[in-house]
Length: 182
Image (cartoon, rainbow, N blue to C red; front, side, top):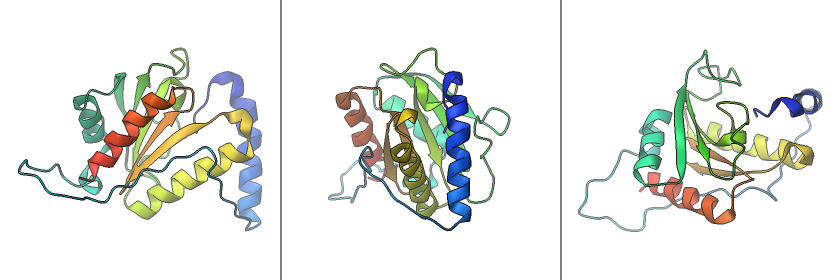
């Protein structure tokens, strides 16, 4: 998870500890700060429906969230040269990624990170997206100094919103992400 520079040493220690635990076969799950949105379609409408979340890439999700009027700005799609995590296209990682600013996020936070507001990560399948969300929440719960975030999951799409935004703002993203599966 990308963080501001003043938290990089803490992140390095946390990642080292996590890698050590993973090597030992330890597994924990957390959830006290996560909200996972899932959506089961309840009705059909006369309007054409968007493609399922699995067919969307981060650029399409970013455009959809912006079209829904969410309070976001400075949307940017990352590639393998701009991905701060260096995970795009790697085995068992996301296939596309985008970031955006949200009021309440840190406008001076590292570019392309959740510190500034939010991140969209799209994975090859729903299981990999769910595993990523669980991994992030496990790390945040084990290392409170890293902060919190809202994680909203639908299909293979994971939308991560900084925990610094107001719950009412995060709720708008939750509803929009759930609507991606409609």
